[in-house]
Amino acid sequence: MTHREWAREHLRGCANSIVPSFSRDLRSLNEAGIRHDVRRSQELGFRGSLLVAEVNVTVDEYQQLTRWARDEAGNAHQIAHHASFDTLEENVAAAQGSPCDYVLLSYPANFYPESEEEVFAYTKAFCDAVDLPVMLFVVPLWNFGRLHHADISPALLERMVAEIPNVAAIKAEGARLAGGFVDVWRRLKDVVVVTSPLEREVIPLLALGLDIQYSGTSNADYFGDAVPRMFDLARSGDVDAAMELYWQIHPAREANARVGQITQTTGFINRMQWKFQGWLNGMNGGPLRRPTMKVSDATMATLRKGLVESGLPCETAPNREFFVGRNPS
View 1 (cartoon, helix red, strand yellow):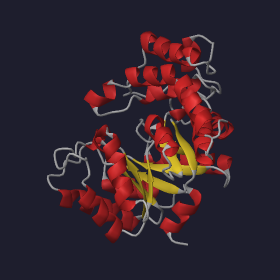
View 2 (cartoon, helix red, strand yellow; view 1 turned 45 degrees about the vertical axis):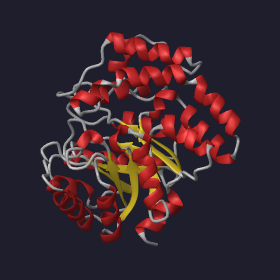
View 3 (cartoon, helix red, strand yellow; view 1 turned 180 degrees about the vertical axis):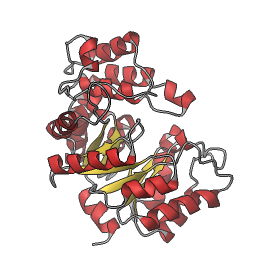
C-alpha cells in the first residue's frame, strides 16, 4: 500500500491536538497525563490526535511521547507526528523511526526562504528522509505569504504532489480564507486527501455536498464531542441536525476566535491556552515549561462563558486546578 493509499483509507473523521503533559517540577514528561489525553480524545469521538511539538520538549522526549501515545492508542486512533523542531536535521531525526501514523510538516521559525524553490527543497529533503505519509500545511504561520498570497502557491503544491510520492494529504488554510481550502480542493482532491481543521467552514461545506473525509488537526476538544458529532451527522446526510449543533456552539466558537487573535500578530499558537481549553472538557491540563505564552483569568473566563452559553460541558473546578492537572506526577 502506498502512503497515499493509506491516507485515503485511514484518514477519516476528526482529529484534535494533544499538548504534552509534564511532571509538576517540569523535569520530565508525565506519562499518566499523556495516556489520559489519548484516552480522552478517543472518548470524545476523535479518530486521531496531533502530538504537539511546539513546546519546550527535546527530540528524545518527543520520541518517548510518541511511543506512549502509540501504545495507549493501539491501532484505533491515528497518531500524528508534528515536524516542528528548530532545523531540518532535527525534524528528520525526530520523525525517523517514529511510531506515528503520519507527519504534519511545519517549517522552522528561522527558515526564511526567498523563493518557492527553497520551500520545495526543504519539503522534498524532509519527505525523502522519512518513510511516512506527510501532510503539507498551508497556513500564514510560516510567513510565506510574501512569496504568494495563498501562502504556498497552487502551482507549488501541484509540483510537490507530482514530485514527492509520500505527500499524502494537505491541510489547507491558505490566507485564512475559504478560498485557500476550496482552491486546493478543486485542484488536488482526487490525488491526495485535502483537509481543513476549521469546523466553521468544514461543516457548511459538507452540508453543500463536498465529500470531505477528514478534518484536523486543531483544538477541537475545546468543544467536547461536538465537532466529531457535527462531522459525522453531516457526512451521514443529517444536515439539519449537523447545522443545529453548528449554531448551538456558536458562542464557544466566538470565544475561541476572540482569544486566538494573538496568533495573527505573533505567528505562534498559545499552546497553554489550547491545553486549558482541553482541560475544560476533561483533558489532563497541567503546567508547561518556559518559554510559553500564558493564559490569563480574563481569557479563561471568556472560554468558560463560551461553553456555558453553548450548552456544552465545562469544568467547574477553579482555574488553579488546571495548573496542577488531572494526573499530577
